[in-house]
Length: 222
Image (cartoon, rainbow, N blue to C red; front, side, top):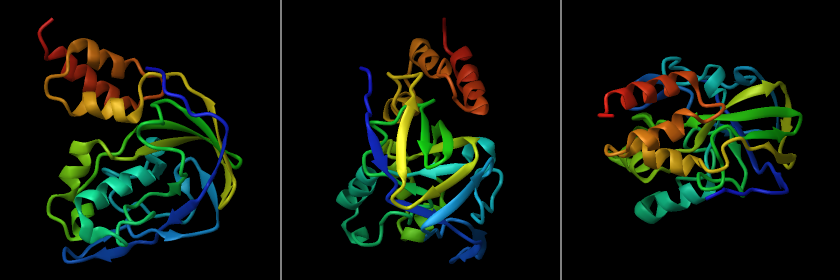
């Protein structure tokens, strides 16, 4: 099925963070994002936004993170105690746009946010820190299992974004591979060689993830 997302949208949330201590581990983290009204964006993301653990966060293919409003609603449906706690910005993302979700965004999509040109590079892999900030032992596993991970962007053209500014889809090379569909194949232990090939062939997919999927495909019987 071809996924469609048409017309202009508006940026409803922008977030960045300084390094803070995550309790009770005592480790530093950049997950505690704060809302801002305007940002400058370069190759590595929003200026002034900190990614502490460079092994898993940041870098050109993970320069910006977006999380969807439907995914927040799904979390609250399953964890009623997080109503009013799991709110936009709280899961560590940089951007909120109401019309965009794992079901409507495709791998390789190019978007113009203000003057910034970005491309969807991969789904996010949720980490243990989500459990810690929301005080839920199994929330990270739930997010991954449900495929409500959000997604990462690489920055193709630096520029500026502002609250209320326009967002527009400018190119969709993989119109049948939404983030939702990608996650379903990625997380299924029974995915076939053909299904994995669909992901591997996605234009714009992060190189390391493509290589990981190629290795997984090679391990399956022909």
